[in-house]
Image (cartoon, rainbow, N blue to C red; front, side, top):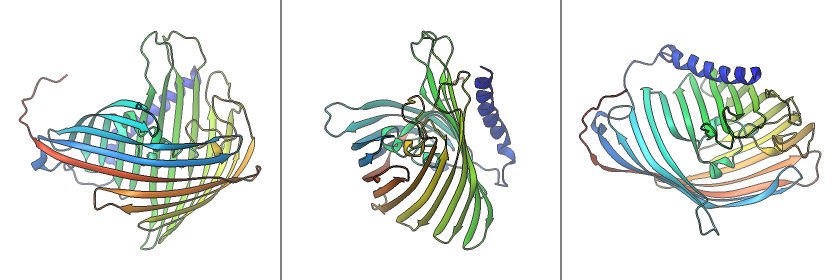
Amino acid sequence: MILLSRAKLSVLAGLFFFFNLIPFIGSAQEKEGGIPPSDSGSVFLELQSRGFFQNYEYFNKIKEGTTLPGVWLQPMISYRPTQGLNVRAGVHLLNYSGRDTLAKIQPLLSVSMKLRPDIKVILGSFYTLDRHKLEQPLLKEELLYTKAVENGVQMKIEREKLWADFWISWESFILPNDPFQERFLAGISLQIPLFTTNDFSLELPFQQTFYHRGGQNIAIDTTLLTLYNLATGLTCKYKQFGLTIMDMTFKDLSPQKQQAFEKGSALFVKGFYNTKGVTLNLGYWHGHKFMSAKGEELFMSAIPEVNTITYPTIEVIFGKCTVLREIKGVGRLGFEAGVFQNLALHGLDYYYGLTISLGQEFFLGKVRATPLPTK
């Protein structure tokens, strides 16, 4: 319980620290941002949708291949009572092709506030289309299709000298005497520019996640789980080319250790080439007893909570090509293909997919509001 308490306290303390640090970060002028004054009191209909076909051809003992064909749709009503404040209510609908019933019907409720033009806090549902800019060993890309929305609290800072994302995402919330445990993922993701010229830049990526399964006053007696991951290194860019080198660590902070490994480390190297519509990645991974609760399983020495197949040391060469085309300002068409070659196993694992993403909002009108007492 001591280790578990420390993990929770470190996350909460970090969030508290950065919330109180907001007034002192950078030198942005004190002014309101977000919604133009003319939009105050406006109501909008927002539509987000993604159609996808993702085919994963995996032939190893770590992770089986699968196919994900389907569409998710998110219609929402958005009310913007004043500058920087947005209240949303809607639903997330997920359907897999070949099924007569929806795979997921999830309510979407959120309140977001811009504390400054470049600092936003969201309570409730928030999108994860950028995956918190975490690398694949910490957060796998399949979640873009199977779990496109998270629920909890998020704060994002987007400035020239700092990009930051702090969040706690609940997968399972519990009440007293529930017959299951709570589950949540908390994290911090930073990108800090160190040096920039016209064609060259150097930045520091910092990524940290806590995954917890547990809870008190529940109707079952089971063990607690807390997994911690940390990744940091350097990213250098020259024109369209770049290189990221990161050292990643893993620790099992659970009171009772039941995972295949208690701690591990890894070296992550990724070269990339970016243009307006094309991104190419090629990388190398060397992991030793590395695990991650939500990361890509093909990078892991063992999969958390499974403990079937273990590889104490694992080496992987991986690559990916992404092609994006804008659709006249309403969305984009995307194609991607990737490979994983585990150097200790025979056979090449690969995947490919096609997506169509759309995002639009429609003005419905303005409403007059009378303030009510708030608590």
